[in-house]
Image (tube, rainbow, N blue to C red; front, top):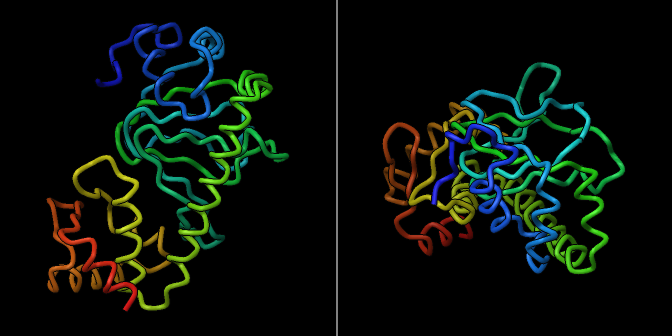
Length: 234
């Protein structure tokens, strides 16, 4: 079922709200009545490719639930070079700053596609985690986030560019709900700490060896996970 982009009053849209409830991991186990209470003042918004959800340094006021689309979290060096912290897609939630001592975002969030989001107020979320069931879910989610951060660090530690790129594509494929990975070369480069020309050259090598397949202008498919994993680990 698709997010409703024609909702005239998104913050009060029961249709959209019910779908948000189903996909917020830390709400699992909470009664429907409490879920509706938490989301009563939520806001549903539509963003276009290139739009910013928030800037680095903005105050953390909400958690952001990505209903559809792709969003990248980035920081920038003094020379303008982009470092991509992560790429989030359907049903992912940007929420870490809500539970930390920091009150501002340490990165910017930019939409890579048309993106539908639900914003839930920080104050409402903080109230909700007083429920033991919700608090336990938050602990589980923090553990998952730590595991994800460790996986991204492992990828960046791979010295051979071609294997680093292959490992990143495996990582993205596992996180994707789509039949193939859709990312621009610049976004792959920013994610793995390599120059776009280095990424392009090594993507061609992976394609020529049959380890990945090109799909359209910026899509990639992995035909054999075991073979690509063996290539990375060899």
